[in-house]
Image 1 (cartoon, rainbow, N blue to C red):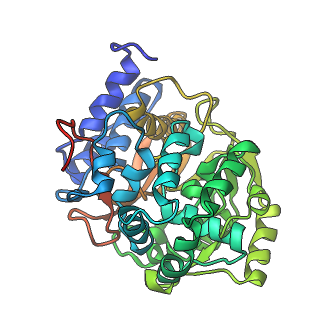
Image 2: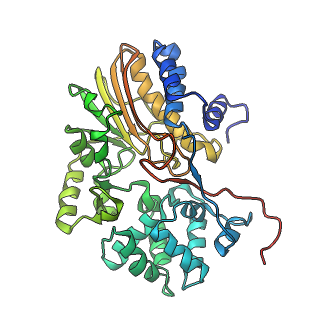
Image 3: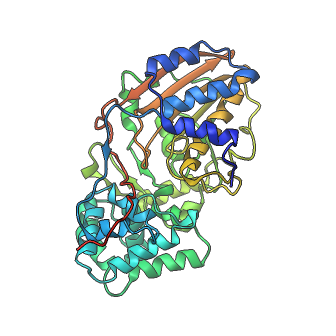
Length: 406
């Protein structure tokens, strides 16, 4: 574990505290820099503050008296999955909550088991609804992305007395796969980012088209969609190859417009997308191990979810720092890799979109372009008051327990 006076931990703690500076003030500070080796850390910290700036108001999960809350308040048991699920009361998670409260089938047993296995980071479940979607596909052969149908018909069967979900989870763990893959770490929804092409403040149209290399950093299985969105080829940078999607059997969804219109790909659509993933340009890359793998002079780095993720990295090379700071460590290191390219005078564009779950971030999407070590263009899709782009909720915090509930 890192020492209390570790300078990296000190930097991350300051980032975690947030910044009162406005976007305009942060951009002014970044624009005043001539980014070279000496200013690399300074520029990295400013960009990180832009990416992790909190909105002026946001929602915090708060539970009423319930068996679920009593579990979260018990200091002697693990609660990572249940805590995250409580902050995302969508129709699927709401149904799980109802089954848990009524003690139906194996609901409580299974949720407690998920929390137990999630003590190992590779088995953390960031999105319970995604885990259940993939479980329904694997167990029942039904690719269901519509939340209402999944909640009403399939969730009760996953948690019934036959313990289907727990059995499936144990099979994944036993064969050495990461449960996090099935729980949303690589959640792929085609069409969900189409709106960025029309956002007037973001400046998507100003992204350079003459770059020599395009990277999808922390790609997961979304790079074919990113290529369609940007109308150009990308190389996926990730620990795992895009072709893993076929082996894992993950559900890939399509959404055009409203969330209520989301559906799973048809078998033909799924096969077409998997074929693209099988052929996708990919480099095995760990941000904690090496600089960006390029000698090109004009670079575009896109990152959808990874760079500003609040999910802990699965890299075995990440420093042993406090758990609550590890996601910020990923952000800091990834930004540093981009700024390293800026510091040697390259033309570097960064486009990042956040979908953080454990914290609320103001800047939904950020575009920054550097040339000759200077910031030359930028754009934001900002959300000063949470609710314009996404209605995320910061997870409920564990409170000290003083006595048993009646």
